[in-house]
Length: 572
Image (tube, rainbow, N blue to C red; front, side, top):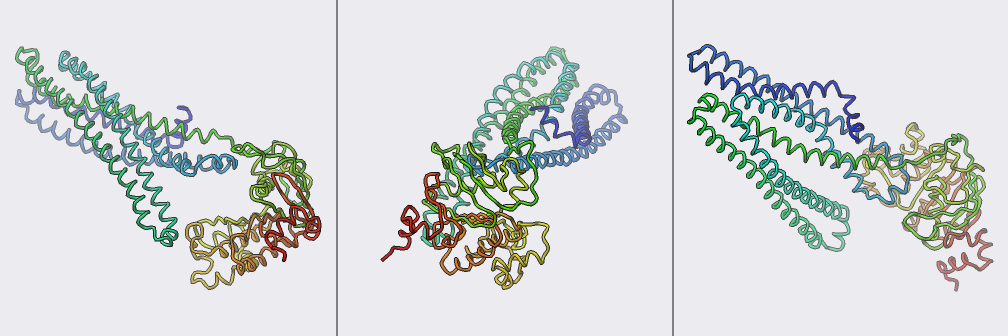
């Protein structure tokens, strides 16, 4: 794990080495002041070396100016390194997420993924930037100051060194409490964010039901928890800083008393005593920094482990012999296919077999949960079948590369997903290399062009988050235009019109009929009026094909399809 973490430094190693060098120089300059102080008190002032006093002061001033520039370099370029590393990690994480199978997203909440990409990576980058700096600089400063204090007075140094474990134990205890309190505060912040997101997303429902007071109560509940958690976190922070400072002050008192006794006993001279008091904090500060580093290390390592957990998820795997098929005609065949989702005990499909010839339209009907949508998910190879085969053009889909297979399949669903952006962006998603003319033709064929032309910004009009500025019918026509532009050989219509009113449905159905021409089409529908003209209708129940035939044939059989049809169109 450490080796992999260090690997992210490689593109920026020159800048990192300069950053560490600057940090070491900052640490070294920090030791100059007590050294100059000792020389002044023991030599320059005592022996009236006024010229050296002024020169020493100027040297210290120059060194402090250099330290200012070095600190700027460390703060600026150190954070630049961290930001670039974070961007690299986030890119790797996003690229890997794009390769993961559907099952991963079925079992993982979006909020969890976002947390890995933001909060966890922030902790990792804080460690990446400040970790080496704190560890190296604090260690060198601690060692250097300890050696220097020994050169002043061994016994006073050992007294301070003996007190250091008290600072470590007490500071670690209160720092852990502070960390736990702020962790709880982050949780309540997430609760507020979730409440606000839910309320804003559902603002239309809130207004329709006049439940603004209810939403305010829900928000206030989370807001109160946030205040309580903030009080506890700031209390813990106050305890940590005040007690740590008190222990440091106690050290100064110990040095004051012990040094005074040593001075009285002539075990130390006045100059060394004064220098020692000045230098104590140079020794104690890196100790507190190292305590902070341990917590930072734990947070960063935990965040990096969570980052690696996602990267360790197995991506979708193609067969080694999978080939690109550039000219897919569109024949679909299910051969004795059995499939079950991980989260469900019963199989979604049980030994199902059927064929859709090139250019034909087959409708899948039946009660909800029967397996119709599962069939649609298996054709693009979103899930792997347990037994049996799914074939396209008489080739097992496992022997076809994902890219070439999915490029040949267009999907229009009931729940249309549109990306935040313009109408143009969403249509061009079907084929980013398409021309403006091809995009407009696709929009016309989807019956959306005339509406777009009524907008002030035309195809550059922004549609809002998930197309919130569009009606249901407009969203659906936009998704159809996207498929027109993709121009696939196989078309899957999964409840594409079920959420629309009758007038809009007729308009959408015209666009869909145009879209189906010359393509192998699978239609999933509950409204049986939309599938009467299908070449074949298959009734799916409990993962099996229980009936097949044309509309008229199935009505004559007076079986499952006839029952469904009569329930929708009660015969008088």
